Image (cartoon, rainbow, N blue to C red):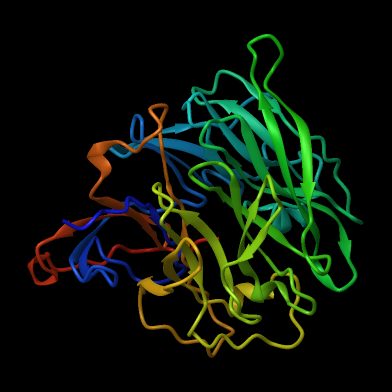
Length: 393
């Protein structure tokens, strides 16, 4: 019997038609896979196996993102974690991730004093003028973990915090200054000890900074390796490399050995995660899509040109293959982009994924969370119906 790799796939595909139920052939195994819609929105999804709980973010009754929690057993039941909570910033809240105990959720929060005209660069996934916050998963308490003051020159910010599997370390990337050669700014990698002794409020200590690039540029944090010895991230580390050509890397936290996993200067490679057994890495990439980047792009113009698909590779960076191709692409832009991104299954306190999830993969299409479960053959699935996908931010 072939070994199954339990991975959650999360696709953010903008302004396309999706199906309530469809079937495709798995490009790795060749087996049939059924795709079923779970939810019609979502961004920056993390799944806690213990309890089968998902945390994500979406705008609720205004244009600002908020963190929500729901159970995969009852996707319609939602808990709003940050919406209209006293003491919590009420602008963009997102990039949530579970603490492996299930007790806490870490997320990014836009500073409340940011001018509304600058909100666009503070959305989840952009992170300018944002801080790290921690919440009790039941919403009973909140703590600010970092102290980045609002600024419009040399603005700071944070992106995609990730806990180690033992819950003792937090990893994120942080904007520290403007960059005269790029709108995106100068970012670094931060790794800190997470403290929760029951006496002091939860806090971060022993903050370490890594900046292994050949040039000031962009980093985005993705995941810890299953043994927590290495971190996985993306960035434009090579001299002359633009952010839209970012590559994937691992960094050994003990030896500081840097390993480059993708090697193109023009393809967008991002949102990578290890499978729980550490044998494979899934990520989103524009490889082979021939995206035509304009020579002079504004800070957010990439949105009108970028197309991506899900790819999978061996953990050492070999054997690259497309794992999910949502629809035929056209990169003649500018147009509404279609994006794909990934997130891995979060093991619970037991240290391993729930056995009941062993044959399931979750996908988010057009803001739609869908479950991929193995089927005897693609021809046996039901016909698709239009899901009425609306454009996502």
